[in-house]
Length: 166
Length: 293
Image (cartoon, rainbow over all chains, first blue to last red; front, side, top):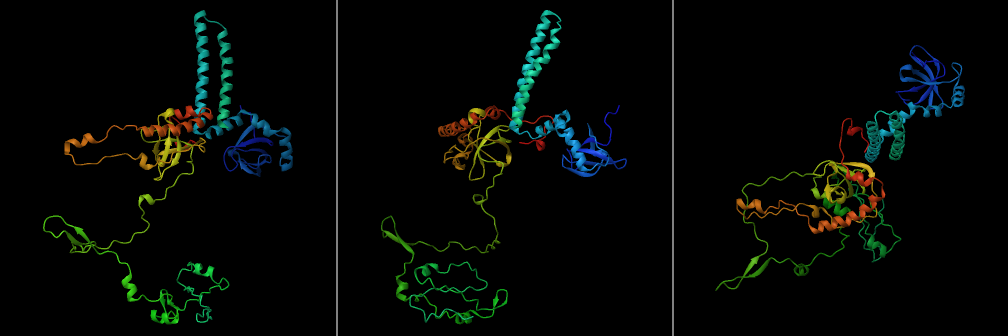
């Protein structure tokens, strides 16, 4: 039922507080509410931090408890946590949210146009398939095609969104 | 302090007015520099300190006549007093004028005073108005412009018949209103004035640096014309008022001149034309204070 545990070396994401948005590694547990935490590669000094503001990630590092910052840093860089984190969906969602908040009025217009175009393409394809299937009776092809059609217009929309957020 | 000025001993060319700086006077007076430049440049005029010690603020130790003597102004006369002949020769403004008068046996002309005595003296005097400070008329007010509004910015109009439309800002006029254009072919907004307060400035800008805006587009050009000739009776007043606004040829020409330049710049940015054609609106979940414009 629980998959991520508080353990030595668990990488956590700080959700609020002065270091909101940064990754840290749990070095030691102080008591029921606090942990000794260190983020050498993310700009967080070694300090006590309450568990409440930490959200556990999937990454675990290997170092002994109360290891000094140098060891934590070595373990962090060996595992390449920064890159692995940027590749996770969690980090990408955060990034997308930030970009959306920074959109200007012109960007919003461009995204609206891109979405409209994409939806039109998808709807067009769907209608085509529906017509085909209704004419010739139920066919197994119908389930395969919508996925392929969606992938093509999706990339166009992502490109537009990226261009807008530039 | 030994005074350097000994006018009796100086050469005859030295007639500089040695202005003495008192403690209360402003020291910003020019030192008679025109006379100094032509004549001796070596002598630096040193000003004496105030010869009138201060007893309390605004009160000096010596009277006017005592100061006259102390400053030796009897020696420092630079112009001769005006003689009676000079006074008589001075040009005085005309006091009377002779005007022709019509009619028979009237003598032909009258001598009339130019500045006449008042024809009415009020029984009660009007009390003096208190001095007011810093109340300027509208034409002298300081005009401000938000830093986010620069020539070429796309603005969103919030009031008026063009509310919600996105327009291009051209310049600020003398009264502080913003000169704005659609351009007309894009969103039917002509060259128009808009108020700074009722406008949202977006961060989208069009490069207008090369665009020349005609000089005759001022506030007077855009001001609404009202004809006021209340000589008619009640019934006719409503007919003469110009209800229907007619677009003059000059406006069309000006619109074309400005818009052609701007459209060229708009075409360079992809999708900008469609953006200017669209209108701004809020929908569910959209909060203006959270939007970045």
